[in-house]
Image (cartoon, one colour):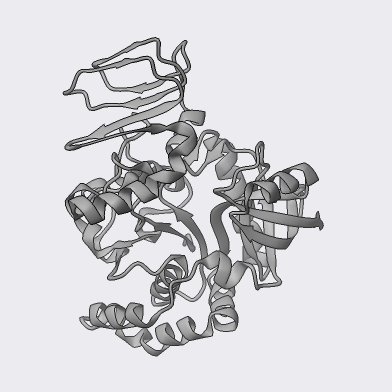
Length: 362
């Protein structure tokens, strides 16, 4: 029996990819890379190499049930866990861990976002297998870390201690500190020190170790789910989850557990990772034309235009002249033009559009 499970977190709204990513169809449900598979489908494909279909759980918003069923027909409906409210990643994982416990006490789990880019999949799978081997023998919370190549402020950072020995591994470290999204000055210090790695947001542990971490560090959340264990997989599960989520704090796994626990380790590796959280990260990871433009759309003409991201639907003709370093992105009834260097403003744009023009445009 394969006792390895994969929990895919797919409830985000992806507002930094607006206007392509909308609340009704966020970026995890889009084929932004033009591969023929959405981010969610690529994530499933990747982990399906080592996880059987029946051992997947997807945790998502109650609004995305039909999208999940459409894009992952391999899953049964009971494998799709619906969140009534957005409460960050800790309640999400508590829900999934307790669902797995209702099937088996003896399990290892991989927890992953649904919208990351992995270019070197064979190396990635190799490191996952190493990680599963480690957590099956040690009471450890393990994450995958990536050596930073720039002072990125949008990622979390992991500071490591000396290497730890486990079988033949030479890339295993005890974690010293977690730092979530530092400012540019701190990020530069981290990168220059050589002691820090990017936090991939992918976690591996045994089920028991994860549940114990919740009991120790997020006791309130652990108790709420413990009190309703008998209601899972019954007709009372939905009202129980609604009530529980309404009472849970909004907190991430990183803040709630990883920054506090003393048994946290990291496997450092290079598997071509990006969280593709922004237009800028997409620009870095896709092929550009001879003018440094990233063009998506069949009917786009550019003149004297360099270093731009242009994303226009195939049904529309777009003529772009005289721009350098801009994002030009269109979706249905919305067009956004902004400087690439100012893309952190996109969240503000989305808020302003919602207030002034209504929810339907975001």
